[in-house]
Length: 71
Image (cartoon, rainbow, N blue to C red):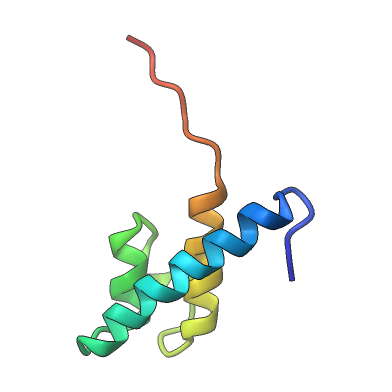
């Protein structure tokens, strides 16, 4: 389900990228926590064995607006 504050097209693309990334971690014997750490999320953000929640959390990170940095 697409969150209300995210463009549906952007959400669909982000889910695809997140699924592909998680599939690589899974193929290499990783855990959902490893995938979350790679995207800068805390490892305890989702339950230990829940790949679907990890995919959604990563997709949300991909859809967030970049933070502007002061020079």
